Each structure stands twice: as structure tokens, then as C-alpha cells.
Length: 181
Image (cartoon, rainbow, N blue to C red; front, side):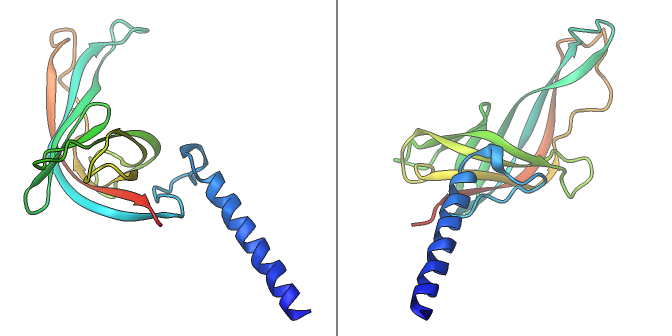
């Protein structure tokens, strides 16, 4: 009786865990405000980044006398002991390690405010491999945390500056996750 009860309980726990993993397999099921990758993923790599967020001054399509800075793309270098990757529009990350042509593209799952004032949000992104390889070939999720700077300018975009570019410095830590085996 006790053994049957144990297996029934274990089976229910396994079924619940499997169901939970299936539910959390895509971005739409992420808990609001939470940028933690779903259960079953482990940290593979943590790379600090330093770069710029590029904004363009544009007129509003719906209110022509309104102007604002619109995000175009990031440009950053990720390095620990040495340069390891570049980050650019997509958003994408590409290895610059000799012999490794791996790259990964992210899709935003969740965004939360940075703990630092005047900083771009922290993010959780799901990953899709663009090129296989050692650095990014098995990445499943990407976190952008510890953000500082990178926010669009508060002023300087008007009818006289339409088309101007603003390069705003930022730093962040990018954490790359892989599936646990």
C-alpha cells in the first residue's frame, strides 16, 4: 500500500513537472515581472558588455508635430578575459573567438525595469541559433541584467534634428543559458 501510494505520488509529481516544463517552454508563459529562464535551463556563460544603444530622431507618423528618439539597434562588445562576442541588431550575438562562427538571435519574452535609474530594462529572451558552434550553439535563453545607461535622450529631438542619431553608452551583463541534461 505504501509503495503504491509512493509511486502514485511520484507519478503525479513527474506529470506535473513535465506539464510545467511544457507550459514554460515558450515566452508567452513567463511569469510577469520575472526574467528567470524556465526550469530546465542552466547558466552556461556570463559576459559583461559595453557598448551603445543607437536612437534616431523621427517625426511621429500619427502626430506630425511630435518628435521622439526611436530605438534602432545596440552595438556592444562582450568580454571577460578577452573579447568573446559582439552584439548587434536583431538582437543578435556573434562569437568573435577564433574558429567559432556561432551566433544566436533573441526574441523578447519579458522585460522589467532596471534596478539602476536611467537604465535600459532588464530582459529575458528566448534564443534561436543562427549559426551552430561552441559559444552559442546550445543557448536556449538570454538574460540582460545589471543594466546601466542606454536610455534615449530626454531632449534634442525636434523638427530641426529629424534624422539625427544619438549613440547612448550602456553596460550590461548578458547571461546565456542552455538546457540541463
